[in-house]
Image (tube, rainbow, N blue to C red; front, side):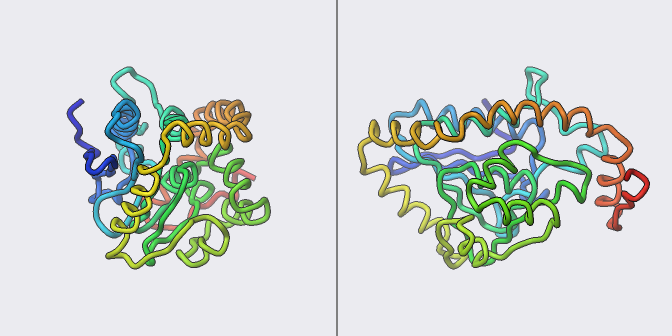
Length: 261
């Protein structure tokens, strides 16, 4: 695959996958998702890669979710070449790849970008990173991994707060809540991520594989909920209510959801 939205490289046993849409705050479209899936499968098959780092270009944002401009212009985020919107497949390949996935958050991790970092095995955050959800503000939601697995990570009360109020949280708060594993100076982010990945590369790959399967087994049942939530969102996304959220975001105004109550 010729990548346009991501970068991929392997060095010293570490595969690094970089979302490369800094001009759009590294938000994703169908093409981005397709390339990320391909890159993760490439790292999965590569016997020279023992760990994966997922990060993004620039210093402002890791990922702010779906490309709202693309949605406004085309009525969709786009699809893979096979005609499918494959965000669920991306989430599953991150969970299922039998190698540790370290997310290096270099700025905003909001919306769908927040979901992606939560699903990764470990998260290292730059000290200027910010975390949060925006779905209910822009007429969207993730009632699957983005909520159910988040509750396992930070607890029910905090997960509900994150979704019900759409606030943003700094890196130190994320660390206190257990949402990230480590906070480092911005200019040390990739150095720290690679140091952690190198520790994993030195370990038994078979032991790591079975341990990852074991951790995943406890939450695997959420996948049924994920598919139901995805179908619900697909039905909702073209509604007037969802359109109000998107339009307000693009017009830089507060949405008026009152008439939908």
